[in-house]
Amino acid sequence: MNWDETGPETDEPTGPVLDDRLVDADADGEDTAVEAALRPKDLDEFVGQEKVREQLDLVLKAARARGATADHVLLSGAPGLGKTTLSMIIAAEMNAPIRITSGPAIQHAGDLAAILSSLQEGEVLFLDEIHRMSRPAEEMLYMAMEDFRVDVIVGKGPGATAIPLELPPFTLVGATTRAGLLPPPLRDRFGFTGHMEFYAPAELERVIHRSARLLDVGIDVEGAAEIAGRSRGTPRIANRLLRRVRDYAQVKAEGAIDREIAAAALKVYEVDARGLDRLDRAVLGALLKLFGGGPVGLSTLAVAVGEERETVEEVAEPFLVREGLLARTPRGRVATPAAWAHLGLVPPQHGAKGQQGLFGA
Image 1 (cartoon, helix red, strand yellow):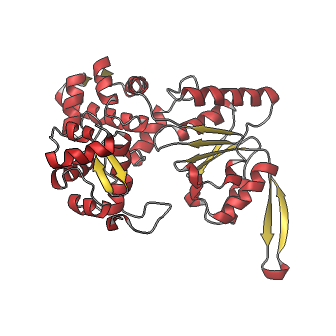
Image 2 (tube, helix red, strand yellow):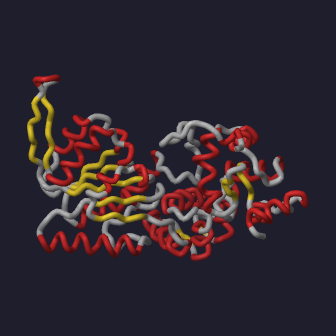
Image 3 (cartoon, rainbow, N blue to C red):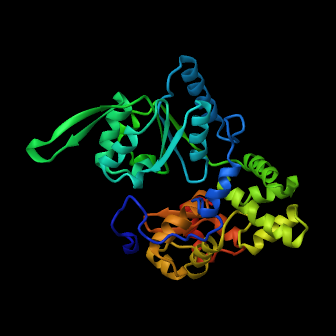
């Protein structure tokens, strides 16, 4: 066993997260403000996620035809793929108000009871990061979703009394980036479950063209393709890169965006042709140049790039693994042949045999 790989297992990242990364899929303050203007208002306007859109459209149309509230909906997938947007579209399609909260904000059953008791009939309750809700609140939610009722406990000890509180029919839309952490009783109470996939470059180009029109930015087909190819399959990142390229174009090119301007702008912001940023390239560079492509332990790799272990594991590695540039093995982290090619380096002869055994190439 590689001793660098041992350590306590946790459900949530415990290390610092880099908030200033241009390719971070989590929303920051600027994203939240801009996304409100860029979000599509109905399913027809929503780009991508064809299967989820088609299935959700049937669910909502059937509910409207019956004159009933829609079934509870669970949306899972990586950050930035449109879960919050779809929740707002569900409310708009059902002509209902929406209440937005998050799992970390509900730490006690009383917090959830206060929210549920104030819902209107047919209202949509969007619960982001639902897997991070406290267990007592989670158990109260079971009854609320199934029977539209909660039991409010009054008093303490032997004199405590459960008072049943009837709730108006509502639709819960839960969003999670880690569906595996949801207990089965909670997952089973959702009438519809949709998994959000990463976007293809062609879909991201449509997102970029639409956002450019709303932002009044001139961009050609090749410029949109250049940005889409560096957006990690995530609309939120695509929109963020578009705004940064727009800034560069306004200063350097009279506002017009083509392939050359987009590439030059993203070079300034250190986002390369595959969407890797400074941290990603630092991890790959250390793995290749200092350790000959691995295997190397996570803690050793983190020290080599001057970051916390959790930052490398939770922030950099998922995309590198998804891109086929890095592999996690029982012996440690190993670079793939694609990583050597991407950084323009030649694998050392003594490491070629080991990599052949791991990757069959």
